[in-house]
Length: 273
Image (cartoon, rainbow, N blue to C red; front, side):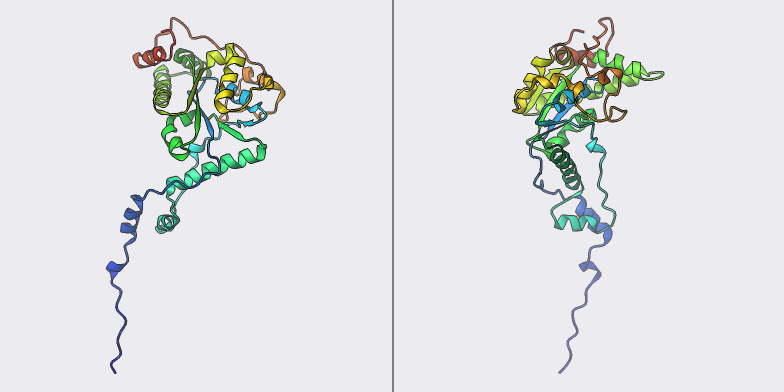
């Protein structure tokens, strides 16, 4: 009887690393289950009082509002040619792996705190709000507005040899994203820094109602609580926030001239220009 040789495998039966990578790049993973279903994000420009809002919320017995977490700067690397294929078999891709990491960090922080509502107030989150919405469809958002002229003045004061054109561009970038979020997100509570400092009880009561928690008067005495170290890159570290007291907002200069786009947004938000 003549022996039958096994069929030969051809090179075409195994995709090359290049074609495999191309196939994986088009794959979009479904959303994995989340440990934190409805986190809260404070969306704001820089220099808009988000650290003050954070410490007021963190003084609540049920709310954990840590320092800026900068989730958007945490990335996952798929370092081998076959890694993407392995993750696809697990119904994961690079973006969803990052989302799982972000979710785990929030859950870990919430668990350690013993509280049940977590708030992330990192201002650059404003620039990626559509991705936050993809990651957490049930997330809630507090939009914290401030007069653009006051933001510009605050940034100029904190920088050596400030470039006003660059500052205008930076503030406009935040303002445009804030307006996008205000118009497009389903679950949004809008407050202003001016309201927060002038009427802190009324403003924090509104935020608590939106978050579904009872207001606590101890929130206004944030200086009596431990909120971690105030230092650069993790939020405001000025003497004002370190004072432990809510202080009046610096008003916008009524004579300051804003670029047309910023002036239009300020008008939309109800600020005089």
